[in-house]
Image (tube, rainbow, N blue to C red; front, side, top):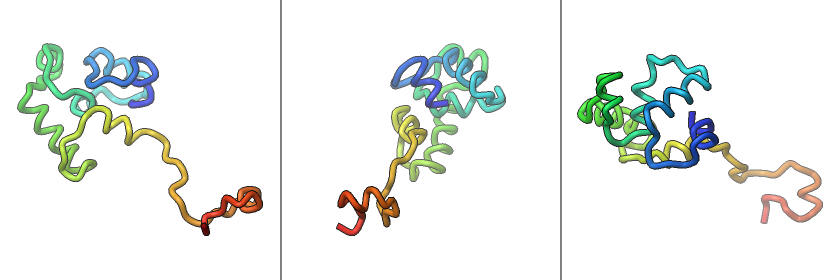
Length: 110
């Protein structure tokens, strides 16, 4: 959902529930997982999280703790941390097997 959210709404500290719902629909994510989307992209409860999904601050903190344990080594996370996880990863080093780069002196042995 991160690429859709950032493309539609830019990078934000939190996204609204309607923004999360639209992004989930666009990504084809089942609405049964919206509590996790809320926990990924919201820090505080809102009227909509409570009224529509019964997610008060206590339950939101439990979900965020579960996500933190699984993906962030039990450290608190922010929405921007979640967005970073979704970014494509670039080359991380190792032996370069690209002949053109090696000819231009850009191999990994130096």
